[in-house]
Length: 471
Image 1 (cartoon, helix red, strand yellow):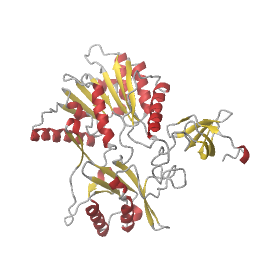
Image 2 (image 1 turned 180 degrees about the horizontal axis):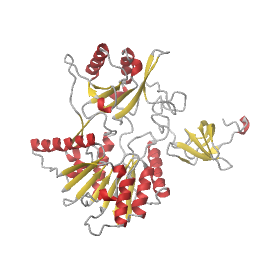
Image 3 (image 1 turned 60 degrees about the vertical axis):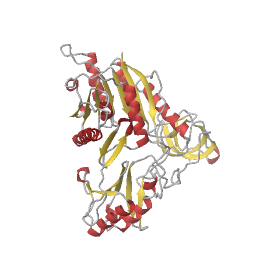
């Protein structure tokens, strides 16, 4: 409770909206903004203030005076505002329809207020399963010597401590059931206090666990990992140093299933292989819908040439190559491009083996730091009819700025032309809004459509997709 108010004078606040961190937003009588964790729009609450600044305060829900009709009972026992609560989810107390509406509003507000852009059409949100959707996760590990136990899970809410988790509703069921066996396993290792992290990656047929260890594993430790992999049908990968040190754990006496990690895109008859450290296929159901929607929004014709910026492993590149006459995939990571090209070759071979009627058109891959892109470098690419942009959270500012520069100051002597259509897939509505503002107000594009993608249910993360047409 705020020290400014006697117990019988604690103000009741009206919650107006949610911020990007799923905190309720209210205003005191003097106009000061209050961010309240656990509060929902249209509720009346009191607050425990934990942090104060001149213009705002931050705290947690103290008393719920009038609840929202959208408030529900969280499904996970580890969710909440209580000490030790898991911080992996922030919106389990809101029903799914309201979660989607909140995220859609976040997208629209960012486009309008930051980019001064209003989409001509709002696309229906992409939805998938509410639970057991997360096929990739980074779990923290901590050996608690005083209690003689190991904790494995996400961090506690707003804390560096690891939550004491026995189950996780957003992980697939077989991974949720592994949490307690993993705790027991790590507790038996000789280097149990030197294992800070386990990264999980699930393919369509294989589950990989990447153990980060800061000290060498002894032969008995290695044998325990191998026994665990055989019992629970998982792969162990070891990471003693940086990501380049990752290697599959194998033994002559205990042969692990060494099938590669992959996921299928059945709509395009493609199989995508990946490494356990690659950030891909977090939510399989949504990923497949997103690829299909992006391809539809691009409206690819047989004569089209396309560029896939930030192409990664080729998740969009290869489906685009099923339809367009030529596709170029551009990525800043050389190892990712090598895997993307390997996926291209493997799928061409699969097509030949089964005499597939779907044809994979020519694909070129280029390695370039897209965060330092210049207009002159952009001129080095052939004219493309359409672009797909799928950047990380930082967005695609340098790329978009280079495009706008060439539109505003065309090189008359060159035949290069800007793309007529751009489909932009974003994991950060703020950087999407920034880039959209450049495209619309300086590049001459119209934002013809935009909508949210519920890639991470029960979290405040907002994924989205937007379409731009050159006027």
